[in-house]
Length: 235
Image (tube, rainbow, N blue to C red; front, top):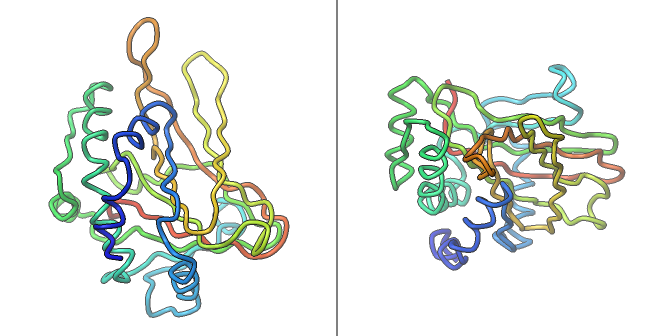
């Protein structure tokens, strides 16, 4: 099924309400098991990637990931293009509520053109690989001055079969309050859309910003693959 068709089939009103209320929302069964295996199988083929990062060398955690090069694999590029218009309206609403002047176009090609004009020309979609004992520290995928405030991660491996542990975790740091954590349960092929850095929350005295971070808990056994779709490019 074409990416545009499968993406349009979701109830985006409900998904954006979930994103707005909690900072994340699940898109179940975005990819088929065969598609998941095919994308995970790209990891060993260096021709698809521009760089490899070993997390322990940078204090990011344990495990590794590779950034795709342009042109992206068709399915990943098509999903990036198809999902963006469904998120741009919420992204604009968030910026307006937080007093941020930046606004986003309806189509991803126009937004990428802005990134490239600003010198952010390197693709940011990535493929992550974790083994036993690996984890990803809480972080934000910012890269440059231009940041689209929502991103997507797709789990390519089946929990309890391919790996154990390795839960996707979000934390929300609230002003003058204790942080809130959310563990997102995914199956193979499920995607989660989530806030990259800040999102607005309505309080009793008006709107305030919360600071979001995401990571992956320790993988206990097996191998876990994830593909990340980030909508802004890097310098």
